[in-house]
Image (spheres, rainbow, N blue to C red):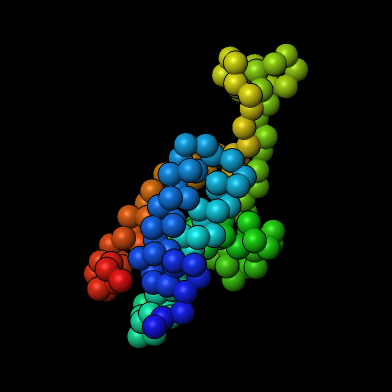
Length: 155
């Protein structure tokens, strides 16, 4: 019997958790939901490597060459360790966060917040906000395709 963490013992199980984390992130983008999704999604690779050691090089190449999976790697490492090594940065712009204030007087610049909003924090790269939900959707689609193509969709 395979080792497990509660009910998670197969790449598909961790993919399912990533899907649940994504649904929570999509419903409410905040520190916890972004962190949970990208850490879970990135570590699908470890479950693949445990299940199919023959895919180790394929996984590493995919993480190096695919922009979305590379962003997933970056966001996971940034969330877990706060610093990202130059090797992991791989030419990507450094990410930061910016807090956009609520629409209350004095918390946001004119046009920066929607009327009645309570404020939000977003990721910024090269001065532009990053759509973590869009990246997350593409990451899930790529993992799904990878698992299906490598006979890892059904445990």
